[in-house]
Amino acid sequence: MIIIDLDNCLADDRWRRHLLPPPGATEAHLWHPYHEGLINDPVHHQEFWEEDAIVFTARPERYRFETRLWLNRHSLITPYLYMRPHGNVRHSVDLKRWMLLALPRGIRTLVTVAYDDRMDVVTMYREEGIEAEYLSIDKGGDYHQ
Image (cartoon, helix red, strand yellow):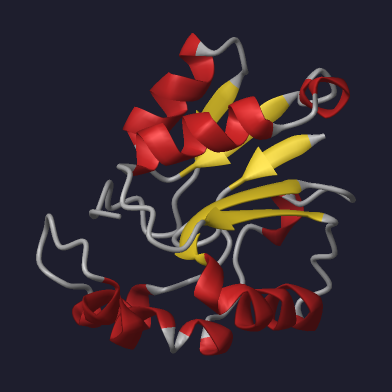
């Protein structure tokens, strides 16, 4: 079982990155233009997908329907979709650590590897005892999230 991120890992968001708000922006309305186009993202790295993969994304819960639609459109079926709760402004590292700790113990023990496009998140997984690998579409590194 794997944990995998979406934007810049599986979902090719390069075409909409110009809509990202300035670094440090936490107001939800500033992120809306970037997120509302997610349904049109091409898929990449589909070869990393496993049945019943666990998705940890910093996308807000508000976009759950669109995210599920995108996953289904690309045959990426999972019962495990963890998204940023409404009003949560935690840094991605803290958010994904919280998601990891929220996994039922029986599920967490089945995780063999986690993939993320942010090295700080990869480091966090490793600190938590999960093998983790950097996976990025553009290899361009860590844009803010």
